[in-house]
Structure formats: C-alpha cells, structure tokens
Length: 334
Image (cartoon, rainbow, N blue to C red; front, side, top):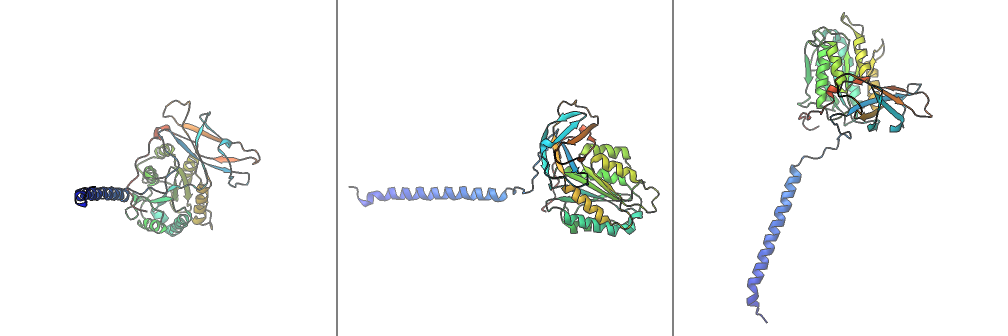
C-alpha cells in the first residue's frame, strides 16, 4: 500500500489542474458577459414588414356607406390589380401599426397669425400618436430646413416637436414644392415602412426651384401618403389649394380645408385617426414588364354582409423608386 508521502505530488497536480480549469471557466464566462454588454440591444420596435427590392406597399382605408371604418376584413376579402392584372398579397396588416410622419409646416409671411394654432394642432397630433411612432419637422419659407431635434432625425416627444416648430419665424415667401421634396427625401431614413407627410400651408408656391410635376413624380415613386391641411383666406395671391388636393388624392391621403370656426386641431385629429384605421397591403408585382412607366393600382373589397364598401388608396406608383431603403440615420437614443 503506497504511503501518503508518495501521493503528495499527485495531489499537487490535481490541485493545479483544478485551478487552471477554474481560471478557464472564469475567463470564458467573463468574455461572454462582455460580449453581451457590448452588443446592441435588440430593438423592441422593429417592423413586421421586410422591405424587398420589388415590394409594393399600399395603405388602404375601407369605409361603409356612413363613412365609418370597416374593421375585421381578411386578406381574402381584398383584390389588388396592377394595370388590370390581379396580384397576390404577401403582406397584410390591419389597424394601429407604427408610422413615420413628416410635418411640413409653412413659415412664410402670410402664415404669421396662424402659427400658434398650427403649433397647437401639431401638439395635439403628437399626443394622440403611438409611442412607437417617429416624427420630424420641415420648416419652410424662402428656405427649407429639416429641424433636428436635439441632434436626432426623428422624435416621438411633443415638446421636441414644439421646439422645432418654433425654430423659424414667419417671414418671406413660400418654397412649398422644395419643402415637400425634402420631406420625401428624409422619409427614406425612416425605421417604419408606413410613412406619411402632413403639409400645413395656405397653398401656392412662389419660391421653389422644383416644379409641381417634379414633386408629383417623386411622390409617386416614394410610396408615401400625403395629407394636407390647407388654410385659405390669407393675403397670399399665390394660393392654389387644388395642387395640394390633387397631390393628396394621388397618394391616398386627404386634403382638409378647415372652414371658418373649425380648428386646425380637428383636421389633425382626423388625420391621426385615418392613419390608425388602415389596412396595409403588399405584393411583389407578377407578370409585369420592368419599365419605368406609371402603374395604376386598383383595390377592391368583396366582403358579403358589409354592404357597399368604399376603398381609398394610392392611384398607382412608379417602379423606378421601388428599391432598397437606405440605412437609417444615427438618431441617438429615443
């Protein structure tokens, strides 16, 4: 039988082995911990819609004979035609999905007395929005500026929006078309596939480099809903509300013309509700020639038991802009 003295070297080897093993396990756990801490957190608010090169997205509002939103429809109730050819839906969502909204606000001289009411309307809109929504402000008169809120490209904070609106005083002329174009450009960096512009202006343009036809072409390529709140009755001889009415209708939005005694906040609330009460449809065009020509879209709803239904959506799109979305801007923490 071996003596205890002969076992001591073996015990020392075992102890050394255990120490080395413990150190290896500690290093491994510590490395994993560092990797976990250094990795960016997975965003809770990620889009359910994966944008692809050819995906066409269509926001559709469905109302009954009384003008009320019709919930509960299913994908099979919809028929989507592109230039007369039926398309197969690959995206179908309904209701309150996150949205990126650009507020394009006229700060020309003729808007001076109206800006406090505009600020109140924007504040009301922001407070009724979902916390996941992201918004930004485009101020314009002779010049156009995208207001970065505390260095961020987007925000969901009503106070930051209010500060952005107050960054420019009412003066000068109206570069409306240039402002719409800048808003459409900025929406390329949105985190959400559902996107809209809300234009608040007394209409008309007397200072833009771009023409209406150029802005319309850009809007048709952008898959962005455009809403307008048109404030008439100023001394602006350039007022042309029909341009905003056509632009909104063409993209699937609505132009509102508040009457005397009707608040701008009321129009903003209607837009907020309209954005919530939508079906999001999407498809990859099948059987279509790859040309840059404008493609007309028609959406039909066949839902027995609901009576006659009305569908409002964009009139079509230009495929030249159905392309990958650029990487989002570094906007900082929300």
